[in-house]
Length: 575
Ligand code: AMP
Image (tube, rainbow, N blue to C red; front, top):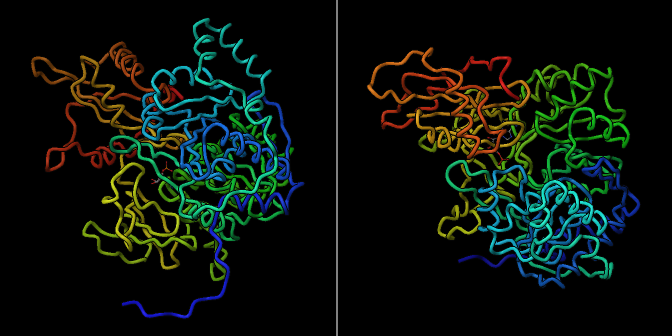
């Protein structure tokens, strides 16, 4: 039996996303939020003005049937911009769930995700209207499409779709409940008392990329989101303050842009939202002109920025630090930022299931200057709020000696305990650990380093490619017997797929590599292109006599990766 204890005498207030907005509105009203739209146009607002518009949006959502605390899923199909930010606050603010959708996903995956989440309203960027019109006929739950622009812009976009193709124009115009965002919120009050909600209430939803089987929904709570945003702002994480100007390149459709839209509200820093144009030059220009002090994103983006900085012979004026994560960042990429331009690089690790920030590399006061120079080659210490361990195949904890490698396991305030729509019996029991599927070592200072991953997905430019989907697509070609797709390191994209194929032999005769002509490979790629998005297609295809198997007869990708460890794509390969 639990003993009676002396209770603390402090107020108890639930941790809610709306409190972040109210705080930013009170204390940081004049601080700017700058968005660059698809068209290149720069739109300026402030935390104060944004909060007023979020209030209008909250009323509009209620008028559209989202009662306070309804938990309905409201989706976004949009890049980083201030209207998206309004949704980030208003949807959870009234107790609905913000479901961010990745427009780069293959359409059947998007359809699966929207159907599974039973999204009711989808807010979509104007230039993504053609995608919306493709998806709409397959979606049962969606009652309304709101386009993130004003009436004039919506008419222009519809006219553009019609000019491109008459039936596309018709399909876009007949999207259910189609309305522009400005009309949707216009008639509503900009004053609101955000409702008191339980902090355990769901506030956000983001689907994983489905490493095995279908994508799985990670359902964040207000409590986990606020704690994650608070911890992520700390000096040894993003070191955010009201003097900063932060530019998240990481998209707001993927794991809440690493929590930055919420951390920024907590500290009241300037936010710069780049929209979809994140090539090196566009990014440099925005960072430079808007005085960004911090930017966060995946390694691919930093490669583009580095090239531009070298070309211009300088860094963006005020840029002092970069956070990199989401995929392995090679030292050859991170070192020059520090050595050539004096920009601090912090390498972090996380997953959709970990909200996502789990660890970040920062020196301690006992770290020697020499060690500090290479600290970003590792993935850093766990944040306060999460614990990490590495375990062997039997689940035994391994030493933190920088050498022993095992599966990384994690637990904490913002780590998933189950997936959305799965029976509660699948919950990780209390005190349990989430198994990440990543392989890592940890050193004596608790710095973790990912060395591999147990999954076989291919991460290209921060986005996943399913190796299984590639194999299935290749095997639809009549000449293909077997297929295996593996990740090969790529200087620009981090990783790109190499496809290994066993050709149908007919009479069982052995086949030499010369037997495979380029026309056959073109034919196989054409077959695959009917089933997967074009950027998933492999950079190289190699025919082999057979594929290696494990003792239980399964395809051994570990062996394949070993065999092709030193493979480099031919210079003429695509992308
Ligand atoms: P996602 O859930 O799409 O964010 O992907 C999470 C996965 O990305 C992790 O399980 C890792 O395999 C990988 N990942 C994330 N950050 C890093 C990093 N800094 N270095 C290497 N892999 C990473």
